[in-house]
Length: 297
Ligand code: UTP
Image (cartoon, rainbow, N blue to C red; front, top):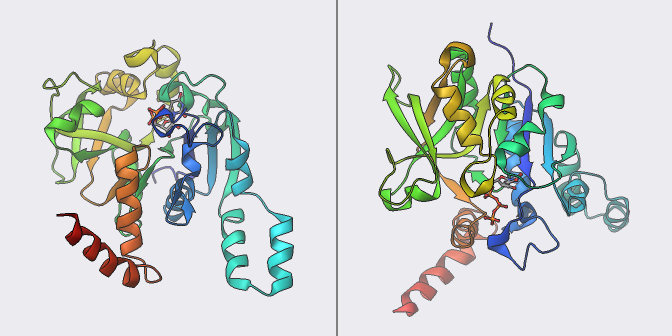
């Protein structure tokens, strides 16, 4: 029987400089996507995949993140008094979503460094990492498939997305070999943000990982890489080329909808795409959007 994964780690300690000044006093993971902060979509996704123990890696301004998943007595009392159960349910939903834990990263020394901060909490078991600014559409399956592949292959697993070759330099990019499963590849190399035109493929690593605890051993020895940061991609590259003791790294190729809320343009697109599909907003938004687009020319 494969190990039953129950822990999710959500790094949310980046500075979010692409969103300044909005992120001067607020983590970018708290930016609303329609009417929910981005981070709530991510926690909901973890819970939907059976991961109810959530460790968030936070940095400065962590209060807003903690408060969002905690009770708000004043708001609850006011809504109860007014008998507004609809809004009360919305407030209580995020409070009761998961068993939340928090650890501070200290200095934002990179995603690899943030993940290493989870070592004590996770222990020696496989765990998932979900980036707090990456949203996977709840109608598409990704994390549960990655957990399944991790159990079957006893390896670490990353999510891969086919991107436009012109965009590859913005991601970690994988060199891969096919497997007998159409959506699974074996990763033989990884490079973080390759110089334009040098990417080994158009398969980019996106913000979902299911990792074996050996990643902590590797991260402890990983020197700062691109941008002077300790890169998770560099640790995964080490694991990919040493499968004998790390179990190796596989990729699940995701063909569903993903929204990068850490990027301003993608953030705006995400809001529009998700709002159009909503029963309460779509019917009014869609005709307005068509009219607006028609007038642009
Ligand atoms: P990004 O590189 O997208 O985040 O990291 P950033 O550094 O906040 O972004 P910009 O470029 O300044 O706008 C991806 C994820 O890793 C987390 C971020 O919070 C984000 O969810 N992260 C990054 C950390 O937790 N710690 C770090 O040191 C770096």
